Structure formats: structure tokens, C-alpha cells
Image (cartoon, rainbow, N blue to C red; front, side, top):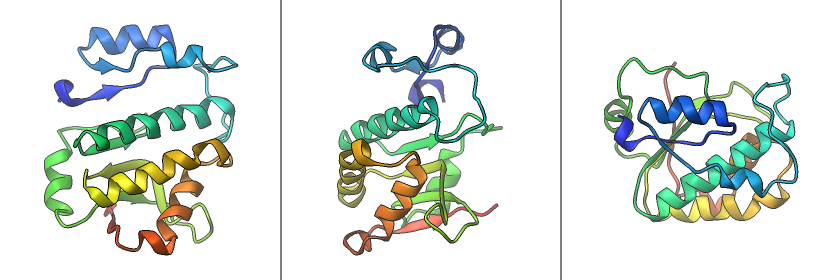
Length: 166
């Protein structure tokens, strides 16, 4: 799975571990363009600058890969795989564009949880992600609110979404 996994480190220590394990990385030069430092220590707030901008970087990387014809699995660091999830995702949602976990909320934060998102590369998802990336500069603190708001828009009713079983 290492040959098709791209990781986005945010500090030198994490980068050294990721590289030593044989994973591909996004070079850390993107961080130098930020006007602040991303702390490797999470302060418990979802919307703090580090979390928000890491999620932006993930969205930008996913967009680039989708545009090049690759399907993409984006996940938070608290997910653990015991085996490659891609075959299961491909079988489970072979007729769906986006597969996501449930955020059991019925406000702007739900029902889709961006913590585990599998996006197939096709015309619909490429347009969807292009729109999402274009909105990143004006989004609030939450990528999840942006994703849920955009997927509800009537122009994206053709994008088929499957909420993954627990």
C-alpha cells in the first residue's frame, strides 16, 4: 500500500518517520508559504489554524490527484487499517462517487464526516472538488461544513454519496 499512499507531513520529525517507513510525501515547502507555524501538538480545537490549514492542504492534494485520474482516500490520523481498505471500498460503493463516514448531526456539520472520505475520479467528482478548492479561501474554520454545504447544493445532486456502515 506504500506505493500508492501520499502523506502530508507538517513537521520534520513526522516527515522523517514517514520517509523511513517508505511512504511518499508532499514536500514540506508548502508550509513555508504559511504566515505562521503549524504546531505538531493538537490543542483540542478543531478550528485552530493548524487543523484548518492541514485540511486545506489535503483538499488541494486530493483535487490534484482526482484531476490526474486517481481515486483518493483522505483520512484523519486517528484511523488505523488492518488491511488495504480500497478493495472493500471499491466493492461496497462501486456505483457511488463519494464514500464517507457518518457525522451523526443534522446541522451544517453533518451528516457527512470528512475524517474518512473516498472519492472516485470521474467528471462529477472533479467538478465537485474544483468547486470545493475554489471555496477554500472563504470557508469558515470547518472543512466538514464546507463539504456538507456544497454536496447539498442543487447543482451537485448528480454526485452520488454513500455513508459507510459503522
